[in-house]
Image: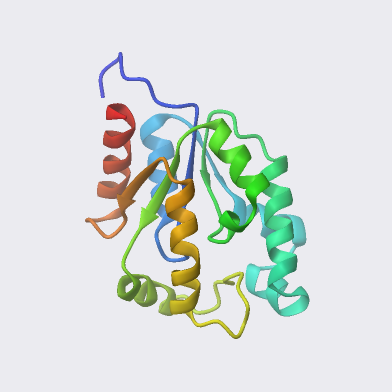
Length: 173
């Protein structure tokens, strides 16, 4: 990047659990000089529980409601925002994110996402417990595409490569 390159003040990352939003987000924050905010972590701190515990105690709709409250309440200024995978169900939350800056969809194919999620089975996916991961993927993918200003293949190389691809698209957009 050159000195004349303008980086947006807020960049939001959306995508399925396992896409790498948190990992890529930290790297992107370091590359841009923006702070990093992870809404899943904010939820856990507020509730004093893991996402999985929240799901088990209160259900997925409660988790989605908390997620919306967090996104509507946090500071978005000068930040990379890593969102929970279900944020796209909230039109209010997505309106706030899209008005703050570009929304980047970290896309990956289903087999890769399943492999990554299998490595951390108790990650707390906010969905109806009767839905398979495949069904959640099929349901959410059109929503991610709808809200994304930029789509980056999250399977293209390591997290550093994905972060670099995001920056490249942001400066050419």
